[in-house]
Length: 65
Image (cartoon, rainbow, N blue to C red; front, side, top):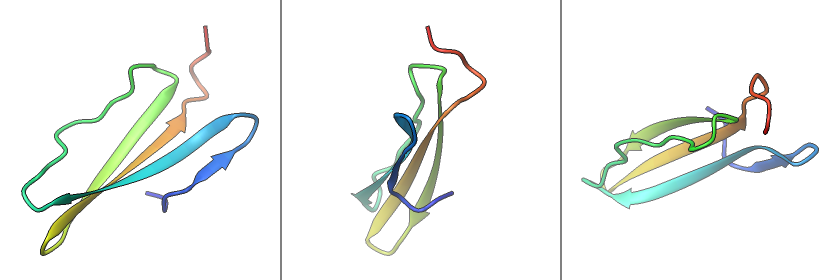
């Protein structure tokens, strides 16, 4: 999983978001409504908080339209 940041190559190709929540608050699922975007996520649990890193990448195998 990459560190969060945005990279633009001919429009948005990939982006990442980090979400920090109180311990006990869990992300159950994340998905794209559009097949052209691939979503991966990872949860790290700490003593007081959990941090979820969500990576979104453009799926080059899927054509737009």
